[in-house]
Each structure stands twice: as C-alpha cells, then as structure tokens.
Length: 319
Length: 248
Image 1 (cartoon, rainbow over the protein chains, first blue to last red):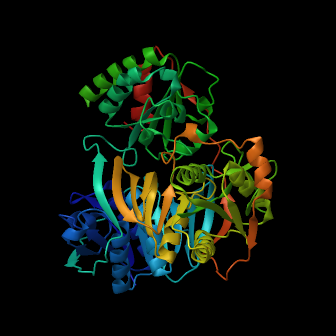
Image 2 (cartoon, one colour):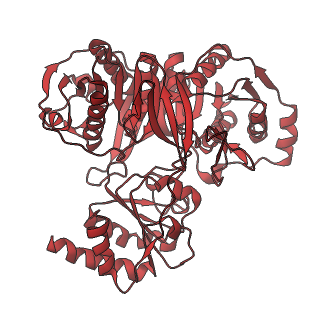
Image 3 (cartoon, each protein chain N blue to C red):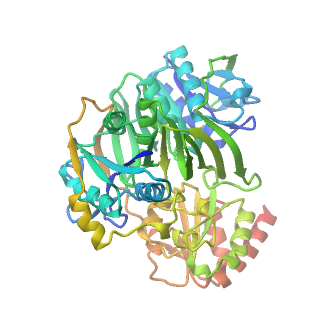
C-alpha cells in the first residue's frame, strides 16, 4: 500500500512539478510508514526521481501516449494504483494533471482535494490544507474515502532532496480508445511558462500600450522569468489571454512576482497571492498593490524599469 | 442540440471573505452573489450556439433556494429553462453526481461548465461529470465549435494552447476565451421580464454522499508593511532581493 505519485515529463525530461510532487509523496509516505511509487509515461531517465524520495518507478513506454490524453493517462494511472494497491495518489497542478485528476478520482472512487499547499496535518482522518476563495483563504479538508487523491499546488511544497535510489520496472497497461484527439499544439518552446516560472514579471495598464512591453520582456529575460499581465491589458488585446493572471486568469505561485504599472485590484491580488515575494513599481503611492507587496518603488516605470534592467545586468555579470 | 450550462452561485469577485460558526462556514452577510465568471463565459457561448446554429439552452445549479436569483439571471441572459437540484453543495463529487442525474434524464448533447468556481476552486466537477456520464471531456476550454456530432475545441495548456477534435456527448470546463469579456451580456428589462415566466424546475437530489469534508477555514496571516525603495537607489532593491528575500 505505497503512496503513488504521477511524475510528469515533457519530451522525456521531468517537469519541475514532477520533482515537487515526488517530494510531497515522500513526506506523506514517511507519515504513513510506507514507500513511494512513481509512474512515468515515456520518460527517458528515471534515476533523478530517487533523489526526491521515490523508491520504485513504474515506467510506461508506449508511443500511443506520446501526446497527452487525459482519459488515457487517467486510465493508465488507475491501473497502476490498482496494481500497487496504493491508498494515496499524488498529482501536480499542471494544466495536464488538473485535466486528468477528476477523471482519475471517478475511476478510483477516490475523494479528491485540489490546490493542497502542505503535507497532511493528520493521516487519520486524512487532513489537508488547501487554498480556497482564490487564495483569499485556506480550507482544512478531510478526505474520507479508502483511496485518496491529492493535487498539490505548484511551488507550494518545494523540492526536498533525500539520498535514495529508485528501482525501476516496466509497466504495460492497456490503453483505452481515445475520445479526444489532438490536432495541433501551439506552444512557445523558448519561453518560460507562468506555471513553471520561479520569477514572473507582469505589466499593467500603467505601461500605456503594447509597444512598451519591450522593457518587460527584457527584464524577464535577464531574470529567466515568465511574462504576465493584468486583466485590463488582456481585455484591451495588448497581450494574449494566456498571460492574464488573476482571479479569472491564471494563478501565479512564483518565488518572485514583479508588478509594473499594476494598481492591484482585489481580483488581481487574489490570483498572485500565493507568490512568495512581491515587488511593485507604480507612480501612485496609494495604489492598493503597495499594501500587498513586500518591496515597492514609487516611481515612473519608464524610468525605473530601464535602470533596474541595468542594475540587474551588472548584478548578473558579477554572479 | 441540447445544451446544459452548469451555473455556480458564487460571491462577487470583489467580496471580502470572512467566516462564521467557528470559522466553519463562509459568512454570506453583505455578500453579493453572481454567476461564476467561468460559467458566464460558457453561458454566453451557449447563447451563440442557440442563435447561430439552433440549440436549446438549460441551466442548472445544485443548491438551496437562495441560489434561484442567480439562475433567474441566467434565464434573463437568454437560457430557456432552469433546474435547481434541491440540496446543499457539499463537495465536488457529490455535486457531480447530482449533475450526472440531470444530464442523463435530460439527454444533453453538450454540457458547458466553468473550469472552476471562484469560491472553492475545486476544478473537479466538469471532469467528474464527464467521468460519471461517459462523455468526452475537454478542460480549460478557450474555443469550441460544433458541427453535427463533431466538435473542435481549443484548450489552454501550460505555455500555449492545443486544438483537439472530439464528438458529442461532450463536457467542457470552460473559461475566458470561449467568448470575449466584451461579448458578455447584461440582462435587459425585456430579458428580466421574460425570465420570470420561464420554467425553473426544482429537482429532488439523488442519494450521493460526499467524499471529502470541510473542517474549517483559515485566513492568511496579515502581511507586514511594504519596504519602500527610492527610485534613485535601485541597487538597494537588487541587494534586498538577493540578500534578504533570496529570490535572485
């Protein structure tokens, strides 16, 4: 009755969230006095998982699964859970895992808690802390079923290294017929995504127009950050919807969030609240963002950001 | 095409979030409730199908009588009829089971739900509903076209988007992008008058127990004051981010 974790990969390499959920699974397994089994789908090298607490890896290699399919992936995981007789199943909060998790919950008849931010406070009853009201509150929830499914919030638990080794074996589940088939994928491969980013640089209406985003992108480049924007900016069509962060956009849980020319509407702050350190640059000292930020610069973004870029270049050169 | 739009009754996005009864219940005092924004995008897309391709649009909510004004608003926007499953929403699984019964009884071809509600943020009801009814499922859906029984949908993925082909019956977890913000409709007087005469059926719940229990709520720790850095001293900001916050 091990803890089972789905460790996602992309083009064969593990995503950062995979190592984070492996770390989380290890914490749960320690509490339960059991081991961690990871399931990988078409991953290249699984030895890395041992470093994050995985004891055993079930490798699924099947060309039918080269492209993500929620129904098929959920079905594969269900077979692995049953094969291992796992009682706790851990997934991440990536777009793909959020897609497959409810299907997996139904397949396993498992109680499901999403957006979980900490290791369980108790394993009997199985009690977790999750975010609710778009980060304006936490909800302490128990999962009351025999098999339990937990989706861990991105960047909430962090990576915990341990010095173990993972044994690996092949696992060959049956693959169901697909009801949904991918036609095309449109993805910028050279850019850091908001979900994966440790640093996010975000611009608001204070930047006055889409032509002024060069400095936002330059700042993001120097920091290895993803770019994001406020809701008005995406509504105005200055930036794509996929960059909109906030209550009705994407949640951000980065280590550092830099807001440029964003006043800080309650809906925006809710969406970025899970970020650990927040910096605001705004001309208006009364902007609500200053109440939510850790560091603030009251000043004109068109003067502050280019200077900050120069300072950071010098800093990076020293490192 | 028969479309069902799932409507969550949620606090307005500007609401102050407080709790009562030993922090076990959301404090609805002074809170304005609205159609969950993700559901409103879906409802507006459903109206587009109704007007351009011919479809019936029903809306459904699982909840007590207090949610009926939200359903009436959906009727005023243009839905044909509403169903309220008369039981408190306890967890995602219990709600999905109630909705599955409505979907099966109504023989719906397309179910449009929001990718998540902005109150409990579970993000699980659409997928569970698809799992329970055996329908195809597309989550984080930002575009949907239906041609006969075939559907083409675009979903947001981390760092981009993906276009998929699928078929009815279909459940989607929708969000902004299904329609634009500017396409959302504010009910007009005629719509509001007509909504009063449209059927709102109260359905009795099926026997479905929850699989999770909410114990209590906590609010985040209040934040400390912001550290202000002069725009003429940005070296200090770099220093603080490196040495104090340790994030660069």
